[in-house]
Length: 617
Image (tube, rainbow, N blue to C red):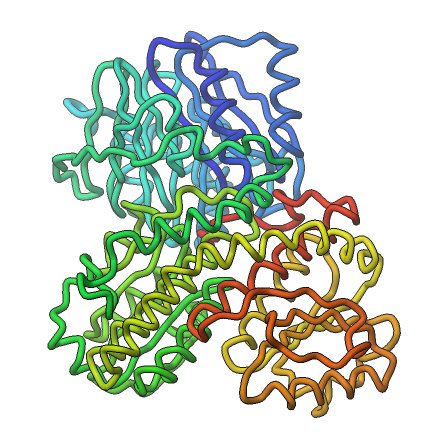
């Protein structure tokens, strides 16, 4: 989950690495550091806390260099301290290394190296990896004759590693060179003019180049200012494929907004338009997907769908489950990706798998994809990042096309996942028994979603005022039914993520089976109350809360006949088709969580203990 930046070229590496780290800080912000090559020395500066702390220290020292590596950390092994910050230097002073991932057998490696006289200054698994490279470099150097000794020491080390890694390494004996490698942790090479940038995310290099190479698992890249080469761990040469990024540095800036989360909330109408563009049939009755790599006939033969995801994406899968079963009458199962490969779930051979991940690098989701493929199933991916691990390894998939999402709490990625889920439901339903006219109605509803979201966003001033009145509560319940139960889970998650308020999501009818014990004057409840066939039952649940003096915030469609004075606050959203309702209903809970977090003085874009892309188990 950490951010990696490496630079080799002719320019000042310090400013380029710092800019990259600032753009990667959403991947981790416990500490940050750089290692700069200064002649035959490695100069390391690292500080606990945000990248700004590091920038101030570097400004004070006025370093310059043309080769260097930088890192922003999300702590796994070891506390948040200067000593545990990356880069780490081998005890002989020859190597500096930055790392994203987890080395599972680091304890055995550390015991071995301690017996060989290597010493350690940190609690991290990364320092162990760095010292193991130094060990292999020092051992029998004559064997490396005719080959790059730097490369070979890393190659030999990685053959002993159990776990995941994306690394960038410097060596004092090889000035002007960087070696990088990856296994289940993203690493991207930016190809410039007489310069190369190695990063864990394209946002760190997009200001320098649009040309990128996505490294694959088991690949090692060797960089100098003039050239790069890629080989495998088994020394096979790799012919690189240079791709073009489809977005610019402006897409990952906040612009006029105070926070990335605010920007991305208000970008949702445009994001939804981009996600559906070109994806409807000419007759306007069904969805079209160009990258599934499965024929309509094969798709129709599937008797079951299995969705795997984590966090917010898992909530989007739950909504998709409801819509597919509701409109296509096909059974769907949704599982946590982190649990799927450890369970022995019986699966029908005519099951089609879907995995959903904004980044395309979520390690648990990637592991679920690999487990499903290992068992012979076809796997489709819904993700937002072209060239990501999940996109490359899936049999087919659907890109979200919403541009970079920087805010740690997902907003526009979530609603685009809901939209794509609704389109998948339509695609399957039209293959089965949904009529042409119902398909046209469904498509028109989806096409109208961006405008409905624009209308919902106009409630922002009212929601901000509500947030001010409720910001000091320490507990909150979110309650919904059918397709809006997952929105209750998502609303609770958003509030927890960015405001640190304890919140829980439940099906509204389940309140009386236990959770109602939590209700009091100090525990507000947020109800989703659209007009529907079960509207009166939702009202009954609200009355049960009201009878126990629980404050109520109702998110109701414009046509829902709420009794006067039942809810303390009412947020109205436009009435809409069932397929679009979860998308529109997401807007008020996103805004409510955002404004409550502001009232509580929280760092919205960098909530404590979290990072954007979860690339470690």
